[in-house]
Image (cartoon, rainbow, N blue to C red; front, side, top):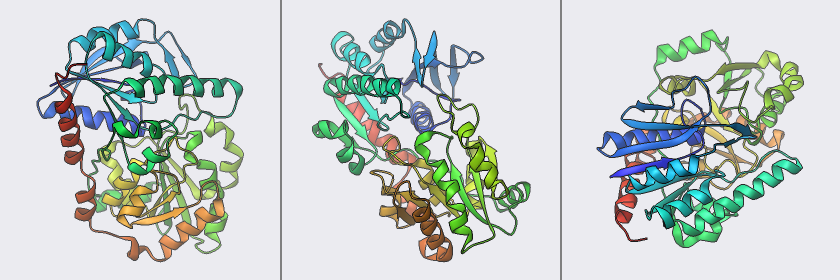
Length: 384
């Protein structure tokens, strides 16, 4: 099949969405499909077109950025030309262009359109951001009306999402693609030594610093954890400075300085080394605060590495701990409750551990890709 994938940001930008699409695109290409990714040219040093692991990546010029969005004159006409050369269009939401892309795909190019809904959009407070939220929601709603199928991570999230709950008859649930090499003991030991974490109990966090990730709540949990586990250290993996559309790092500087002795910031970690990061952690936290987090891929990656989790009680985000029994679910925006969950896991860690093969049986890259192949294949050549 010839598959066109459209999304605002692609690699090397790091987010759960871009990692998801990269894994899906490259695995589909490895299985013999012709895959093209249409995205934004968000960094000036990136090539406008390149081949990455069998995937053709087309980056359209950006005139300027508006919050997290990109203004790209000519993007839709380029999308139309590419759609005509492909069998199916896979649009990844949220994105402002979703509605026009679905209109072009369905009515002009006359190709089947499949949406993958990664999360609701909820920008930080402010009149302008609320207007952007509403505009993107309207565009995504149009896309939902016109799409042939909508892929959701979980039924839990689909039933609770303000957008997805309107299109239950189109929903196809497919767990996200997960790849995680097992930790290497020597590399785990080296990582602990590098970040002065030897002899400490390690609480992990793996995500970029964004408002919805609940970083402030996690840092505020430190004194409550230290009341019962004094020798604790928090390790943060992921981009924390210069995150597109975010100022979390700058805003949290007073809090970070207050607890600096207990914090280490690793920055972006290559995926091939993330297993060692999770292997170094005694517990991984996903303290997200709203529905812009719909699952938390890092939870499964941590579980595959033998690390239990503590996650917020949000639709979709609570799914991994609930189905694997390999973690705790805690109330959102509650530092003390988060600390209590962390301590429960740390003090009874063996009770939360599950064999890697058990987690792999529930969440595997092959299962995800085969489900997409089946979905795309069922729509290929369909009259629209």
